[in-house]
Every structure is written in structure tokens, then in C-alpha cells.
Amino acid sequence: MRIMFVGDVYMKKGREAFDRFFTEAKKLHRPHLVIVNGENIAEGNGLTTSIYKDFMKKGVHGFTMGNHAFSKRYEKSALDEPNVCRPANYGKDVRGNEAIELRLNDETLLLVNLLGRIFMGDPVDNPFTTIDRILEENEADHVLVDFHAEATSEKYAMANYLDGRVDALIGTHTHVPTADETVFPKGLLYISDVGMTGVKHSIIGGNIEQGIRKFVTGVPERVYPENEGLLQFNAVLLDFEQKTIERINYQE
Ligand SMILES: [Fe+2]
Ligand SMILES: [Fe+2]
Image (cartoon, rainbow, N blue to C red):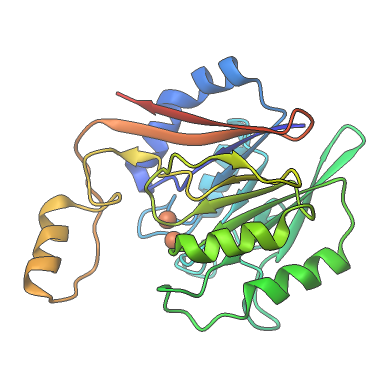
């Protein structure tokens, strides 16, 4: 099973960057399944039903989310769609799927999204005990976990914790691609962060002028996207049989 996992697609320019590079990447790498992190894909973050449907038509099979999963108003949000997976470590009776199963011929892939707790802000449940529970409750041929977290220490702890228990642990959230893709001793495919799909010269997708002002003055303000500049597309290709992980980084 070969999977292309695309890092956080950041708002309108991110969708443009996806359109600009996806066909080429797909032709070259021939994935069986395509997963997209969609936590920032709509304007103002979150994933809308219309973008979900549009991307499913473009050849995406599933979405993971992150700390912005609940940013869209109830009626616009795609959280109830069958191929969308929100972070699993929220409390009980939270809207959306805590894990989803995708099928490829006679094989199944369990897709799980977890939030980290270091430098993240939200008081979510323990991601380590949450993944234990999910692995106990679900059976699948393969498991892919998107660990949406800030700290590389937490990501490496999770990778060692899950080595030999899941096929891949893919980091998202920082929007900065790392160069540490590797195969762990018991076969886990790993990267700390896939990176962001959107405007390259930005402050992790946000407007440069505004982002600088925020740090210079210390005054908090809502982040607006950077809408000018060269586009980038960041993804990884995972091969569960060959046990390989390869970065896919395009830029204009
Ligand atoms: Fe993000
Ligand atoms: Fe995030």
C-alpha cells in the first residue's frame, strides 16, 4: 500500500498550491491512497463540506485535522463526513470521527489523528493512552497516525511508543518540513513534520507584515493569510510493503 500524505493545506493559496502540483506528484509517485491534512484548508481555518467534496473529486481519499478542526461554524463544517478524521484525544461525545477506516481492494487502513499537549494550549486527553485505546478497539491491516503537535520531543516519544504497533507516524502542525524522515527499528515510518502547502514566503502561511507586527508589539491579533508569493507543496510518500518514506517537496 502506497500512500501520499499532504501537509497542512493553508487556505485559498494552499488549495491553489495543491492544484498546481498534485497532478504532477501523483503521476510521478502513483499512490494508492491520498490523505490531506485539512485543518487550515478553508478561509479562517477548518474544513467545509464544499471543499471536502471538491477535494474528494480531485482524488483525495481522506482528511486528518488538528487544533483548528472546530474552526468552522456547525452547518458549514465537514466534521461529520465519513472520510474526515478529527483529533481523537478530545473528551467524550465530541462531534466527528475519532478514527476512520479506508479500504484498498481487500486491505484496510485505519487513519488516526492525535493532538500533542506540549506548547499547544488546548486541554486535551493524553494522546498516548488515547492511541492505546483506539488500537485496542479497532482492527485493520495498516495504521497511519497523524500526530499534530509542536514539540519534536513529544513526537519522538510517540514514535518510539508506536514503533512496531502502527505503520507510520506522520507529524503535522508546525508547517515547516523537517529532513528527518526515517524508518524506526521495528519498521515505523516517521517524519517530525511534513510541512505546509501554500505560500512559501509567509509566516507559516500567515501574512508577513502582520506576523512581524504581532511579535514586535506583543499585541495579539487574528492571523490573516499571506496572499502573495510563490507556492509550495509538501508531502511524503509512504510505502508500507517496501518500508520506505520519501519527502515530496515542490516549489515554484
Ligand atoms: Fe496547520
Ligand atoms: Fe495546527
